[in-house]
Image (cartoon, rainbow, N blue to C red; front, side, top):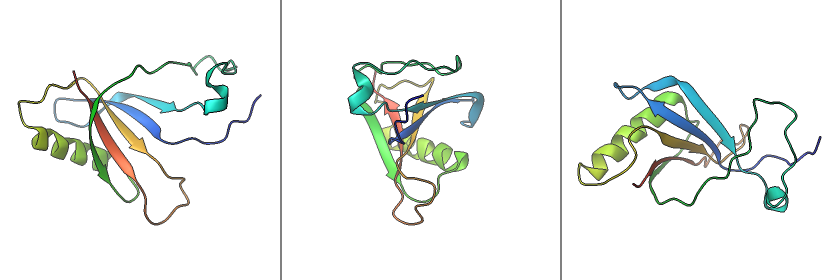
Length: 117
């Protein structure tokens, strides 16, 4: 019952398949605005969960445009190639982040994050 507005980034947790595509399992996360973080309102829909994301170090790449699954998969592959085999990061999931509202036509920002182990 509390309107909080849209926050950025909208973060999708991708669980890659062997071929790099998304599995059917994804998780969408929204940041709770600062003024609600100490005491967030309780969701009335039981499919919505409040989680605290622990501090993390990430490897990141950024790209523009309207991001689709294929873009995130492609940039995740480019980030993986850029990191090579020496970088230690989680391979079982990664984050796909979008920072802009759907109606913003230019200057869009998207990122892929790998979580450092």
